[in-house]
Length: 520
Image 1: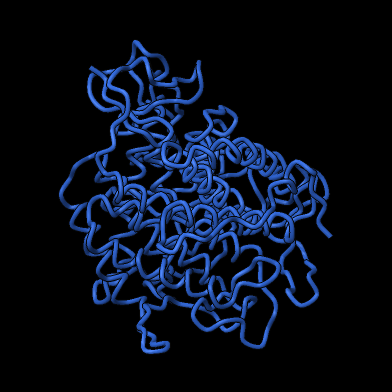
Image 2: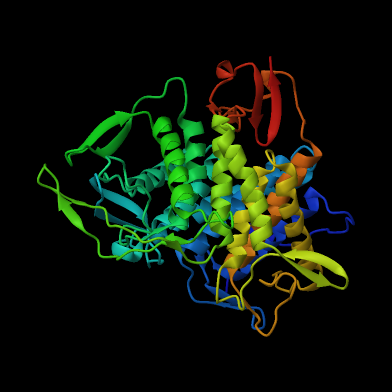
């Protein structure tokens, strides 16, 4: 079974939950409880090998999780850190007691992500190069994972990119930023830049370099981290260090040097526009799953005499409308509206909140109380709706600033469902069932993947509620109070631009570690 250091076990204690009214602090405490239980029960340390399933009747884990569930541990840890930062002023004891250990946990998860890492050469649409990225399956040694063909998929890289970008924003550790930028570049390299008869790019990113089908899940998840990376790299002294590959009208594969921040924002916009055009179901207002295609990869010899991947036509949209595919687009349009202020993004955001509530939620009555239930699966091993729902919920936290009523309806329903499960179905292992309103049913089996989703949800509900309670909170009126990187943490403008030293600080509001400061 799992072995964990005494340092971490010291904190795996029952949290005080005596507060009768729901508060951000209670949500954060529950998030930490779920995360801690999952790390102890569903991971084997020190190599952080994650079990695929956990049986609450035998209290044992089995199997080995793929990289996608492992990424959920990065997400839950980042979400807890974000909540600790947001509540620092109101719950300084929680911050002081727990912040550093979650920073340590985050680093351990990142270091051991290396067991999923592997290297190979890829001939993409406009580039031939070597990459070191993440495979689906865990290897026996770091760097030894198989990543060729269908053994790596772009959506996995996107989820990791998102969390490592968050990790950098939370810790200012450049290791996270370097890895996140590399993964963003790898995903952009998968963009179908072949030209159609009208001279326009076909666009879209296939599920992986071994597939031709193009999925919502291999496009939408990239938008939010690309905007974040744009924010980070858009500095006054930014150099044009991005090698941008493209195809001209004669089929030549060309490269030009561009500003990295410019490329990231451009592709955030392009991916969003492509997915909205190709995969939005306009009758329901939510997103299809995919565009199918023959997965025989085809190549063309370019004028330079080298072979490159070429476009393969896809069919029309189809598949189940999962909550996470709409959630990534909701998060993406929130970020794009934040940095561009273009009205179309705000319109899309509000429509997505309304459509998500109507299409995915269903009323369920329990003891004369109505709950809004979100999609669930028959068993913990038959689907991933728990985590899919998490993606939609966290997108609503991002959207709330721009659509308070529409996003709050969804967020409040998640709060009610989680609290109902916590009060009725929490096991001695500290786990919740995938059916939050229906309980465990006939199976005692769960996945750490699902528990991490619940932990992330509780943490982001804490972040959201803190924003509701203190929408105009402003701390010290001077720049001297800002803990910049040379002292503690980075600071950002409301648009997300990272500042490195106090002299860089413009007049106005700056944000650091979840707190706002006025600089005059």
